[in-house]
Length: 160
Image (cartoon, rainbow, N blue to C red):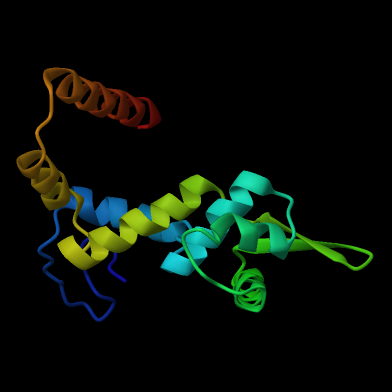
């Protein structure tokens, strides 16, 4: 961990290829819990979000068209997701109801941050440049992005 002057605790300055913006964003995002879900976990949690509270057979039926998983496979994955903190359970007699323990935004954040770490070494500016260069955006979409940036700049000034 670096101190405010970029020292590594041994009195040596560490040079990073990340800009101040990227380092600040990465530090703030690391403070939040990022959930990285497997493809199977995504399928299950989406079914839970759509049906919660729900039992494992409900989830198995919901994803049956996309995945040919048996009830025991779905139940095993759901129990593992409980252990990972992705789902929670409530027992009513012999029935176990599952609820999501994370929000869609938390799951999406984990996915986005995982992609940024893998493809852009955690740096946001190159990712944004890539997206702008490789996607055809309309004038309205660009205006919307500019408005989001201006709004964020306003928030920063208010908090300083």
